Structures are given as structure tokens and as C-alpha cells.
Image (cartoon, helix red, strand yellow):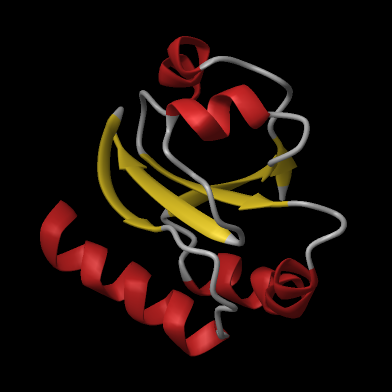
Length: 110
């Protein structure tokens, strides 16, 4: 998974402007992030139409605040630069919950 360098929300617009992008916000100290991380390669393979980008919440704290990401692990989906959905809260997420979220986007985005 690509790692997002430190950037602002304005700079992020250029990263997500083409195609489908999924931002995965996490932090090294977060046990709930560690819980979902092993499932991410399978999720990425299953939803290969999305480009998955890891965002270290601590490194990108200003971006997280600008995007109202106050709990992790969290996911924000974009299609051609427009936000199409978010799974943002402080709760632990299972692989099934993440897949359900992404599946719900397919009906909205296509």
C-alpha cells in the first residue's frame, strides 16, 4: 500500500483527482489499526479498482483535522476527486465491515 507523505487537504486534491482512491487512516500505536492491517492486502486485492493509500494520522494530523478524521482506523473513499463515502469513527473494524462499506460505495459511485 502506498504511504501518503505529509500534505494539506489542498494538496490531497491532486492525489485523489483521477479514478477511485481509498484513504486508510491509522497510527503505529493504535491497537484497532493493528487489528485490521493484516486484512488490508486481501481487501486491496478484492477491490483493485481502488488505489489504497495509507495515511499516518500522526504524521498528517493537520490533514486528519481538515477532513474531520478524529477516530482511527478510518477510511475515506474518493472517485475522481469527489468524496463518495467515509467509514470514520474510533471503533475497531473487521474485514467484513470494511468490505460492506466498500460494497455500499459501488452502488453510489458507478
